[in-house]
Image (tube, rainbow, N blue to C red; front, side, top):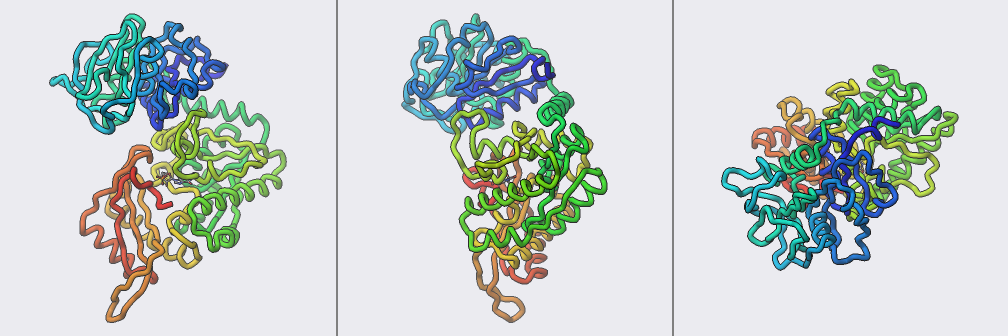
Length: 520
Ligand code: XMP
């Protein structure tokens, strides 16, 4: 039996919410193991022995569309505490004799929650005033309580915002305690897990590392693995993790796409080949990528072309090393949730991240993606646990398609060169002014717009450079960073004075949502 199977856990039943992984992560932050399963698969997969609590997630469906909502009602008979969040709250009410309808007043964003009654679930949750800001996102509401339930809290427009059947240990909440916008949201999860489910702490990064290494060993066996190493945080952590698990069975392949940051290729080879002594093949594919991307402007096409080329190159090199069966990738949860759902429930597509949506259907190698259920900050902690240097682990994220998605429109060699220089100046300035570590991700982009300027006494007609710097917790949401005017002036001057081809610098002041972090 693997370590994973021996742990008591909280089972999260996913109905397709964008926040399902966030719930799992909050539970793990509390030191308790959690697993997610799609609502469609509960029947076939449920092993009740180790489940100490069940959380039903939110989701985009309506509970009254019963054909679409596949759900095994047996969970109410298991004698296991259940917490329903948003849609989960509504489905508990509907299944146990209550009523759910389209809400007269929809609630999106912050709402004021008022305490009506004491509950184990809300111990230490409410502020002294008995009222907290909570984050709502729903268009349906519970209009009649299920049998044996009482109301614990309400908002102005939603009568049943927290409900409980304390004897059965069933709880429903209309708001989202897992998002940081809900004041003290974590306390609700804490109370549910420790006071109501009586689970003991059993989860830390150390045993997460052990589980991942063990799983890789089990899956890979004696076969060989190749790893798509980019030198970024995710692929570096994957390479080190797999190297720890299967040593020399691993060969890393580093593809120089020509779409990398300045001097990146030299740094990667130095670190992994020389320092970590990991088998590394360097592939110079600059011309190939540039040719395939010629005259391509559409973002999804760019991503698909890059993804397909990557895989073809891996397959070609895999043939050269005998007995390669697996391709390891640093795919993270946010990459997956924005392309397709991790558990098979319904979420909407935003863009095809190159290492997920871009994969060709007839790919011959099997994938190993040990980080696919983790968020960026969890991966960073894991990297430190694996003894990777802080310099690698704390590096800003860099997307697989590289500079291609930071040059909207057509990509040329000249544009790439200009952008590499601009980006290098920006990032070095951040380091020099001790700003790098305060920012989650920063980069320069080259806009396909030429504008008129004046330098010396001459008219110029050059490209525009866009700078983006954001703060974020996990890349799912982001806010732009507030620079001082002096710093922005300094960077703008440095870029324009040193780079031929740029005569204007602009700063991106949009958050995510509504924008995404990258331009394409
Ligand atoms: P977006 O633009 O979707 O970016 O808000 C969220 C985070 O993901 C990175 N990103 C990618 N990473 N392959 C990757 O490995 C991709 O295709 C890709 N697209 C975006 C982005 O840099 C940010 O950190």
